[in-house]
Length: 204
Image (cartoon, rainbow, N blue to C red; front, side, top):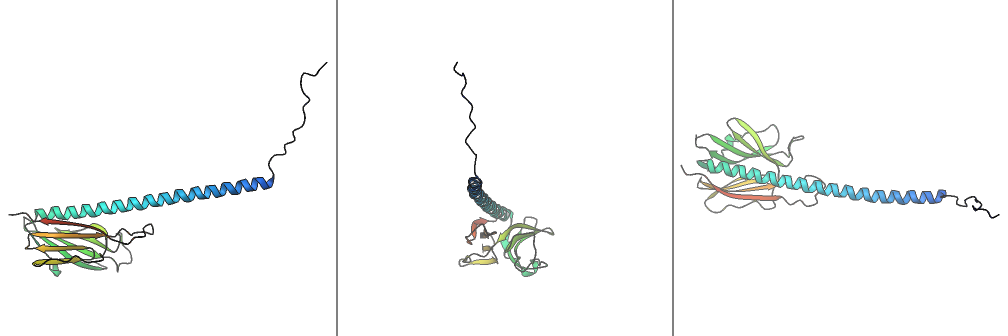
């Protein structure tokens, strides 16, 4: 009588050798390292882009704020040195003295943080606003441009360290603001980001 089932034979497979396992582990490690490097590079690039977008937006908002306040002012002038506050560290440079409708004054000035060992704000400089006894930072990370803006004949030049104004007849001004986008090793370029605006005070 024939057997219905074949005779079971022991398997001749001996599995993976130690050498094969080590090679597989090495290849997997290399692939994981490459994937990890790519992910880290992508995250850093995203961080750089988000930082630059945020700083550009902050600079534009700051210039829009100053422009709106100039439109509400009666007169524009370069501030007297005595009206520009001093800080515990660093130097200050007056840029704008706005005479408001109630005859109060709003002073805009640049605070250079280069000489400060520690600061909550990004260097090299910040734009500050003084009004009614309140002194606030409007935007940080201002920097020197490669070429300082030149004002035409009959205008008053004021500013420094990243914020400049060309004032004409105490009624209008051309503003220049330069932001430092090179705030980390993520960016190779050191070119400042410029924003500018031409604005006039209201007629009273």
